[in-house]
Length: 148
Image (cartoon, rainbow, N blue to C red; front, side, top):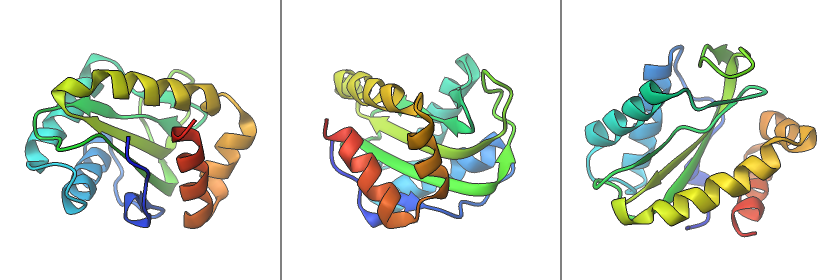
């Protein structure tokens, strides 16, 4: 899994619905060259969300998808001040998104990354840093988590 760069972080993502946030994340993935077809990846994220909400709780969602349009495994982070109803397990509106994309043969990478994130997302200090840190702090925090 490649480490995040500053281009993988948006601390002011625009959107007020799951669709608009997922569309913005697909656009971000496309602009970074991680995917070849933004519409196909958006559909992957939407289908995954339809199966079961990726709202983890505590204002965090981890939308993810496996798709042939993904060129290499990637992680994106986005945040906004206004919460979006994500049907999260705790019914809290989501303000932070960690988006993962993997190619069809990248399931092991996806499981490993989600596992690493889940072990950290349960800690209040980690959540607080995601919600309040500046871009450099969030970048360092996620890269440290993903390299473990």
